[in-house]
Length: 344
Image 1: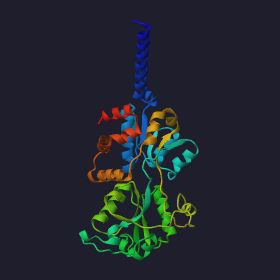
Image 2: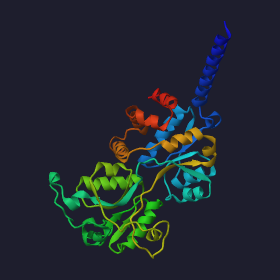
Image 3: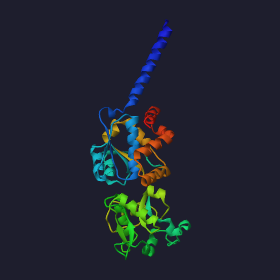
Image 4: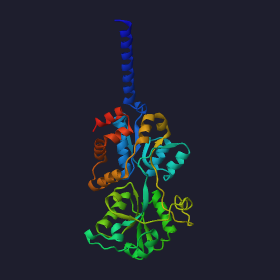
């Protein structure tokens, strides 16, 4: 064997070794060689789906052990700050007080943009109240109901069972950030004398009340957000509010002041919250979380199916990944995508 052949064989051997080394390094996240990845288990559908999606890819693509940590929103967010869990999916950036302060203090990192275009928040009524529904034989009862300022003259449509002299506004459950903001908005729009500020016990109870009223063709005024299955399933009319105003927003968000002025809620970026230790110790997974993004219509349809069929999130995650292999490959390297695909 001449020298040229020897050099060529050495080169081939070296390239094979490097390829094998790269494959081994991509096989498992460096973090996962010694620790599991602990995910918070949130309580609303979109966050649960995002969590199951990210957990599946981390577990099977990066070959990590994963755990779900249950607990209230405040408890799990505090655990993220202290480093007792690694990932809290669907953080409403700037609106979750605990993680907002932690991010500003450098104790938590908010990664990526999970929903293309960000969130939508507002006050809604069924579309048939404003426009009618000929297919269901429903005539428009409030054709001039266009804005939050118009609610007062139509309060008789939204009578509260507990207080017939008032209409009922369906707020978020007590303790949610949106519950506090909507309570301030009721003050700003001078509706506290005319509407009961009704807070369901859970997000599920809020959904059940809205669904029940819509199925019976009744009037209901409520706060809601997107991504959500409710807004994807039924036709609602969003009441106009004053344009977003930062000065007024400060009188509505995270405050109890009586000196309020009206403002629409700003669109919010949905991010993945991660602990500082995980951010520094798992750069390959952080890169994936930074690329993970879904379209609003796609996510709302998935959430609607969860509500309708009660199908497990894992089933929908697998189906989504099967049908959207190209999307998966935009999120992770090919070798990781192949590993995930092999588990579908």
